[in-house]
Image (cartoon, rainbow, N blue to C red; front, side, top):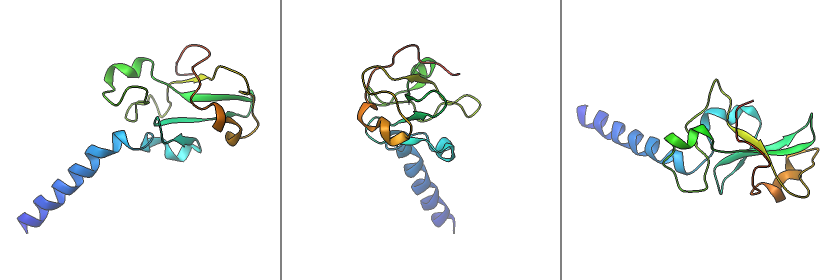
Amino acid sequence: MVKMLIILLVILGIAEGRYPYDTCNPGLVNEGWTCNEENLCWFGCDKLNFKCWSQCNGASAIAWDGPEGTCNTEWHSMWDIEWCWLRGANTTCTTDSDCEGVKFNQCAGACSIA
């Protein structure tokens, strides 16, 4: 029985150790945002302002040891993330899918929690 428990704990530890680098922050999956699997950033269309936005690393960059250019998948503040409006042409939108082509764009301003 003890061996089975140890094996289970090892498997869970390995699975837990992988998640930060293979998907967007799993604690926020119920927000209805779209995950950019390539850089681990949530993104979408703000339907009130008709602008594309993306998760970004501001203060959370201090605690993130993931690959360069990826978003922190562990940190959030009160179930909110750091985000910014996206820069460039074609960043107006009415649906999240309108932002697919600009999801890798730079931030148009500061990366912050709003």
